[in-house]
Length: 260
Length: 126
Image (cartoon, rainbow over all chains, first blue to last red; front, side):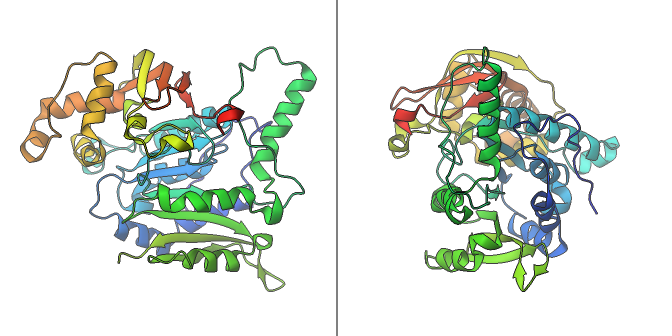
């Protein structure tokens, strides 16, 4: 078992606390078959850009960055974190730096053989809206997947947040926290927006996305929908949190294109 | 944010995606900080192919750095430690702490604060 990054510096007022879904991400990406698949895919490429959307505390991205050698077979990956919440971006930056430091401090000889991973940074944005077309090699998304009556309004740029009254601050914090889990109809409204952007965001040849779903999201139907994009698009479950009454509670789906 | 990060970012306004003027974004009033990192030549060699060279030169120039090479370094240039060290300093060690990033197409400005750029849009542009 590879170590989970520390988040002791994070306050969870507006940030999602690592939970079962988070750990499923870590276990899936570091599983022997998935690591072997990723290592094979990025064996001879330039440094892969690994983007997590919705980093929260940064545990998943920190884990991937710190354990890049085990997961990708190389340490020269380029991890980039995106979140709509500025607090999450600050937390992620710290989590990833710390995780890399804890895991990749070794002797000079070892460093000669494998360079240390460098964190590119955190950016505040709505999903992949700020990313250049086709630049993402690996996309990670643990969405707000819980079905909710209403989808929280889309985030927009706000003025300086100093000078908020106590009730204004409470309202803002509740809003930011709701963005971490409330997914609207079938829990899919935000995920659907991301899925729609995937063909534009991923590198046309080697790009791959990992997206988490819960049973109410109807992942089987989602996978069929992705396969119907044609042009070699594929979608397969590569990790799940166990079966309950015949249903997989949480699954992680790998979305990629077969080279034509 | 590191200078290399800007290599992957563009204007968040939907209508700008198809315009070549939306990349690279332009730095204004940038406050820089040098964050020392261990020099790892093989790492630099592996990231060079990912860099859009002309845009990188333009951004570095806006930040006040002299030109490095007219063309993206290839084979022999990548054995030149001086060039690699310079790229290391620019791409990985140079941090933009405060400032703005401006879209060359629509003119929208994105603020960088404490090293984190904010690409959220005002409601009328979403």
